[in-house]
Length: 356
Image (cartoon, rainbow, N blue to C red; front, side, top):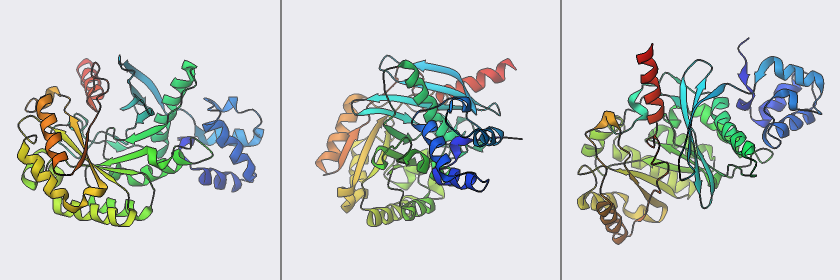
């Protein structure tokens, strides 16, 4: 039997599964507490659970579908994990330390088909989606790492910005969010969770209607179609006008702020005229939009792109602010390790390909 990850079940799904097999509803609550509050690492640790119930769970589910392959620790406290899945594939998960808490960046796919020309994640094409259990397990792996350190630290924030396009794995993404937010478990509040998309407009509508009450970020990276198509091939299928229409739907229905991510590429999209054009594109959406300016992490395979100078970043920021646009510059983490998303995985896959 190919056992699934127990982390893939929401509380309601676990409850229904057990009750369908003759067990009391209360047993699901006990198992859930062991998973997310007491954070058992093996079914055998779940003392107090009905033995028949425990045997049934062990027969059908596992708690570990990934093993730690590599761990890089930065001087700033950032930790990048490379996990190997049961099928041999590799994924990245990152722990970042902020003044406001501990944030984990999770991966949703093995590889990525969006193909942004500056991104290390897209160097290896998507081979499959991750299950909701595999996404949840990344968070639990990091939490178990923190537990072992014995400092009483807990994951407080989540960003779904790792390898892959989250909205291209929508069903598993939603299931993951329900598990993570559950008040009886990790209880990470929606306001502390951000999902990033390259701009799948149809899914933005669905995400809006599902009213998941988590933050949404859009990878924009250019203020016009010509430039965005040049660096993000998805813009051919979903041009900016179509994307902005979906964003308007989200803003109007949810009244929540949205983040536009803008990675700065030297002499490509970082000039004053680009900032002015971006401000014009945002227009009267200003009260509900924040632009997050992202310094570029160079990737060997994308040598056509270089990092924007700090003075240029400041000028771009100042131009937006003078136009009344709320903006920020992303604080960098792990600059002394493989900082670019997907970079560590890409290097390891290539290394294994050569050795084989």
